Amino acid sequence: MTIKKPTKPKTKVAAPKRKRGRQTLFAPEIAAGICARLAEGKSLTAICKAASMPAESTVRAWAVDDVQGFAADYARAREIGYARLGDEILRIADTPQIGTKSVSKITGLEITEGDMIEHRRLQVDARKWMLSKMLPKVYGDKMQQDITITDNTPMADRMKAARDRAKSKA
Image 1 (cartoon, rainbow, N blue to C red):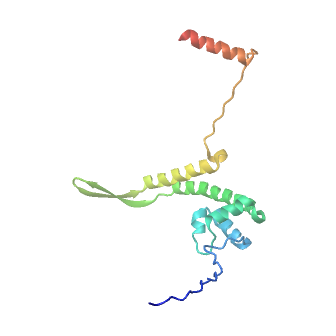
Image 2 (image 1 turned 180 degrees about the vertical axis):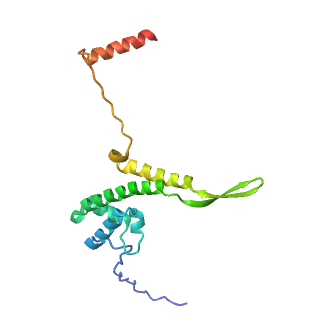
Image 3 (image 1 turned 180 degrees about the horizontal axis):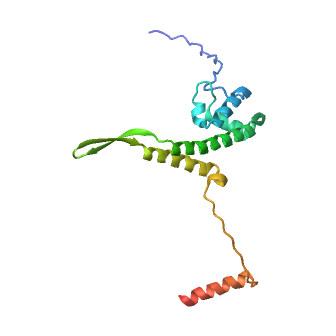
């Protein structure tokens, strides 16, 4: 029979934790590059996919927290980028795009060549929709209501009279 010697508990020395992910510290030159690309009409998602760029959530946090005045630069770059998208709508609508369209029919594959109007319409509609949501005061549908009341009867009396008319019709 063998006797096991008591062993000393091993103590692990914790290795210094390595930071994972991209650098999240604000750098003015990186922020300026991001704003320049936003002003060109590029999306923040596309910009942040580059290896040298911070994560999209980090950039949004910089804007929300207004790190070193980044919020104003970000907003201005976004506004310029949206205006550029408006210009792009006109370019897409005015420039024919020649391509081929294939349609499978019973008689075989029918291939036609011509302007890709459906594709251009989709591009224009997608940009118009986005602009109407991002800048509703500029690109949204304008709805205006003007209500003029000339009767000096108090509102409560008018509401009661309307209810009475509704009951008498029922």
